[in-house]
Amino acid sequence: MTGDSEKQDHATVRPGLPDGWKSRPSPGRWDLLLSFDDLAGGRSWYRLASDGRVFALPFVHKAHDAAIAPGGSRAALFGHTFFFEGTHAVWTILTALAEPRTGASELLRIPLGCRPAWSSDDSRLAYAWATDAWSNDERRFVSCRPEGQPDATGSVSILAIHDLTTGLVREATVWRIQSLRWRSDDREILAILNDGSRLSLVSFDVESLEPVRTLELTVAPTAQGLATSPDGRHVAFCDLSSDEDSIDDSPFTGYILDTASGQVTPIGPLRWETYPVWSPRGGSLAYQQDDASASGEERVIAHLDLRTGIRTEIASFGEDDMPDEIAGPDLAWSSDGTLIAFVTNGYGGSAIHVVELATGSHRTVLQTNGLVHSLGFVGPAG
Image (cartoon, rainbow, N blue to C red; front, top):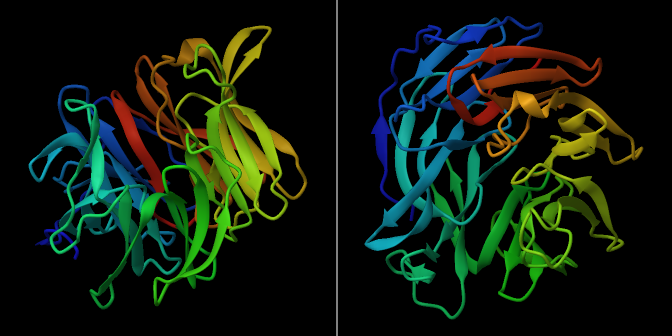
């Protein structure tokens, strides 16, 4: 079961800087994939090269975000819709598997329960096929189960692994999946499941999709941004730090759970609706914070090394530089863990910045005249 699929031919991808954009060459060698909203009803995908060239990509499907494979050769594009298979609800739809370097893509239509995850060799995609979604019209979850799937009590997902080399898709029905990633050796899928009353970290064998170990998490089901480290040892997440349900009443706080000891460590208030992001090898986190200083509010990009416990401020920006209500996409790591890219949203449009962790060197590589909704590395650093 792979949903509706349609191949798109390779298209010629030529460089050209859109009107109103300014790019700046950067040392090293990397490419970034970004989705862009021109604020006039147009959305497009671009690839930004470290030498300052910008390539328009012929991705015509409705998608605003991407899960990018570690090697950068493929990306799973997805976006939101309010209507799917006869239901009015808030659905997230996997719309295409794309090749950012060539512009080729395969159109899909699969409802997602969480962000998809790629194997380390870029050849296999794990995703959670959502069987229900929240309907604002009906004020409840509405069901839309794939053909051949029986009704079940409670909210379930279909865990699927799509092997792009063979074209085979293997599936298993499980409780609602809130987070997915591959273990660093690619032998297991690490999934955080919600059975309606508690969260569990379940390791699934990649070949059989049978669970091999289950660990109940000491994390409230209301937690957001759940992200497991590549070795499965830690889980990062966010939640309001009290019983209040408003960011005005209680800080949106980041935490790290050590699954071996059960200890939960706060990492401080985070920028609203942004989440910590693990480095490729899992030894550190990057995240965005709102920090009050003597000169006013600042947005801080921070890096936390779990082995040393050292927190480093990568960059900071004054509150006058950015409208508070626009958070921007989450931070992006290069595949080798040496670079972090992030977006700031000023009144003139989104800007993209790249930081070299070893030196702390920070460079603005692109200024746009609209909003960047998604950002990720699709080429090696070096």
